[in-house]
Image (cartoon, rainbow, N blue to C red; front, side):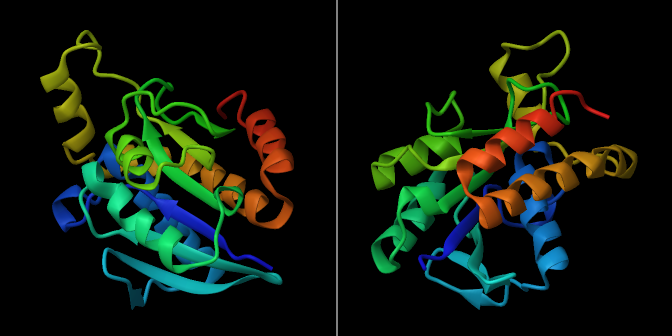
Length: 198
């Protein structure tokens, strides 16, 4: 059976750990705990963990490149491992979803997300599954580029992180459904569960 690749997008380094742009990394960190799959291995452009969820082989991956070069890391996996788009799920932040909202989709555009743009450009692929976690936009400056960059890259306070933990857990459950049941069932379950944020 072809393994499932779960890729969280974010920026490496402690200064970025608790930022909105690192929501993908934070979900992968949560999954490493829930599945007991430590990120204890290195490829050229990523750190990863390898294990099984029930009887399904899984790789948890965090690119070591910065967000805007995420595709370099994923290209390495497509070239070196027997995976297809159907077996890849990318977890990332999304400006166009309200903060904390979680949605799942298969394929589609990049919506201006630089990490997804890099993946499209480097791999030529866009049909993979995504779990999107909303960041919302900076109030009153929704289209101000400088304000958006600051919004995505500024560290969040501990109270905000605690508030968002429920969203990270919901996203992790969507990822687990993908691993166990495939994209169609997972997408239905995820989007139905998360149609209302509780």
